[in-house]
Structure formats: structure tokens, C-alpha cells
Image (cartoon, rainbow, N blue to C red; front, side):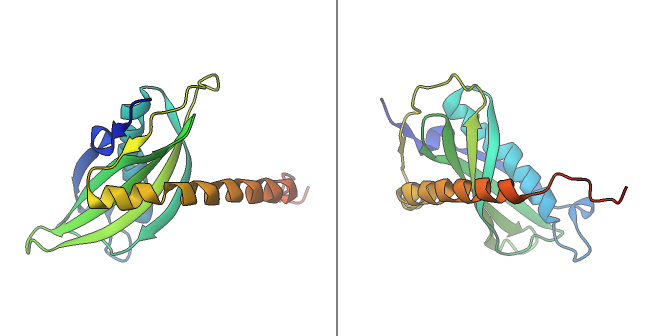
Length: 170
């Protein structure tokens, strides 16, 4: 199978921080960031698969520095590893204070998407990194994928012990 360049899946979006985006700490609400990330990163996944994908997991979510009013958030996402029905997308958000021009890494994560169609059995093409960042990120895919498999097993054990009974007294 012909490898695909990470850049072929690259998505770049920019968002300016406005007052309604802020929480009580005057920084962007984490849920807002996660929503923007999932919406944008799914485009990178569909660029590769050309199929409907669903979010399976968010891993290594790191809120590194807060985004404030007068910042812009430049989100970059690209596919960093593939399997048969699943693929990993790396996401980073670079903040920029629009009045000073100072830039910073504010957020990173990995998202696993799964092709919704369970009959899809053709392996996805491998990814070819272009930049030093992409090489570093793609080189860690096998390790992160193994960690996810282990967590799925742990999740199965947890689910077997989670009650679905009503928490309210009858």
C-alpha cells in the first residue's frame, strides 16, 4: 500500500478568543477547547479514510498554558498512525497574544478515530512524516497504540464492575 504524507491530512484552523469562550478564571473553558479539537481533528481523519469516523478516545490530553482574551488559537492536526479501522490524529494548539505577537504551545493531545462501518476491513495506508515534529510523533505511534490496547482491557474490567442500577432510593 502506498504511504500517505502526514501533510496530506494536515488541517489548520484559527480561532480568536472572545469573552463567551472564557471560564471563571478568565481563560478558555477546557470543554470549548476539546470541542474545537474534536471538530477540527475529525477533518484530518476523514481526509485519509474518506469514510465516516467516530471518536474512540482522547489520549495524552495536556492543557499546557491557558488561552486568554486577545489570544488566537491556531490548531494543527494530522494523522500520525493507522491500523485497519482505527487511526490516530495528533493535535496541537499554538497560542498567540495578538497584541504582543508572543507565541506558545498551549495544548496537545492524540485522538483515536474509528471508521464507523464495521465491514471496512482494508488496512489504512501507512503515514509518511515530513517534518522533524512529525517524525517524532509518528515514531511513538506503536507505543501509544499498545498503551491504548492495554487501557481497553482495563476498561472492560472496570465496566464489569460499574453498576447500572438507579442511584436514587425507590
